[in-house]
Image (tube, rainbow, N blue to C red; front, side, top):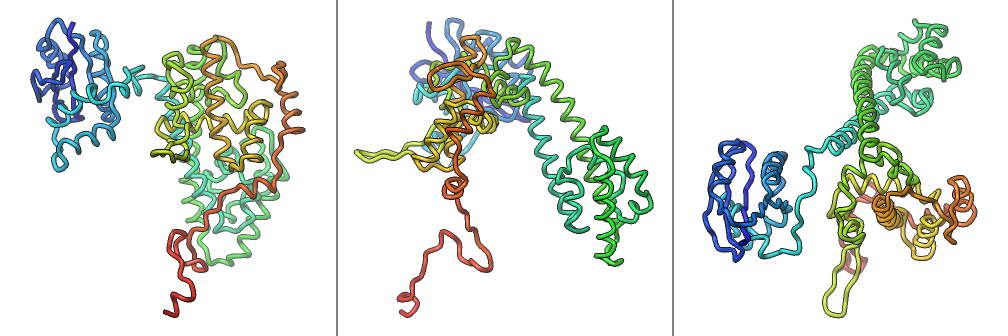
Length: 454
């Protein structure tokens, strides 16, 4: 059976273009146009030789590639996704000053011949996977809410510094957002509302967790703002702007809560044994994000391949007898790295084996916090995959292999593997930036006194 390679340059609005080659890279036909319709796809399929084993090569162009990949996979074809940077470099090699759909399809059809070890068959359908989609959507909404919280903080600074303390620095809590959405960033509105009614509002919005002391702090902040501005600031206009931002944040909170409920259901269906949530530092949302971005953990041939996919392996620059390792390649999935990084920061406080590695990297090898956590994240990823393959939950162990509880793990870590704050300050990276006091860029060449005189 001959091997056929179909390179498809995917378009979002225009027609796609396809080129077919044989296993030697000879073009059988080129630049055939078609659209994502059953009629065009069936016509394209009928033009392929019957005795060939088909490999389809595409770039992940927005989401237009997903229905095409699904259609070809259902008919037994092997679908391969090529990173756009890889195909772009190859196109520049063929023709530096030309970029066309026809050329792209011809290049994609020949990629398997030029770099066969770098191609992997498609696992899953990306945005068509519900868990992958909802975890990404939740992360996007959380970032939007964080931006709004920063704007609210900046607006409240106009009223005075005491407002931040009055809300305990938590501007995305239901209590804070409901008060601000109601227009009570206006000190005069708070004064008219009165102490008793404000206490009732706070008690209701916080579900009984807050009450009189918080109300007195907010009222004191309002009186201080009135005295500070002495009529120079239009409090009502500022309160209206704050209320708009607060209402947007409340809407985002509701959507995030609904997404989290869907995530819980989806994760339970995919992980009925609770393997992901058994990992220290991995909760339901974080575990769902790791599983969604990682895909099926069994698809990796080795644990080293999984670490490479995450981008948590160090880069290498070597020539002859000289070589050095750099920072992480970051060539893999960014949301996966984010979830692993957050999980590792909590896991190293509970698991003595991870804490020992973190302690050694920080104290002995001179790494800073982020660098040490990248190493711990890669180790945590391999353990997660090992647990998934074995079908057993994560077990926290002492250095001698004895299973221990989370409480005992915290005690061991606190006693033996705490990193002194002085060492953290010493390892902390310094970014001077530029200012009126330090006007030159950190990368600018220095000028000594002899150069100035000359």
